[in-house]
Length: 122
Image (tube, rainbow, N blue to C red):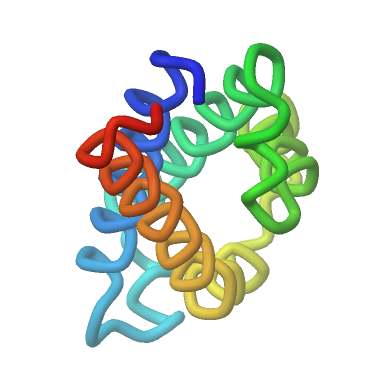
């Protein structure tokens, strides 16, 4: 794994945790009515997509460990360039269905990297 990939994976991990924590015990209606919450969530999705884009460029093998990597990067681009087309219900669906899976995958890659480092393989 490229050394920078580890940093970017940690950024993704932290962004996922923030999204999950900020939206826990909330409903779509709350998200829909809270522009500050929306902005924070969208910013963290941008971080996730940017970090994955950077990993994809310098470490494609690590990027391939993330299911739907290209779709995640595309979602980041939509948030940044198509802000006026954002559908809060779609964002909410991604938060509830996809972010936990992404978080789990990134945690697994980070664990594997830590195990490799501790055993001297990386």
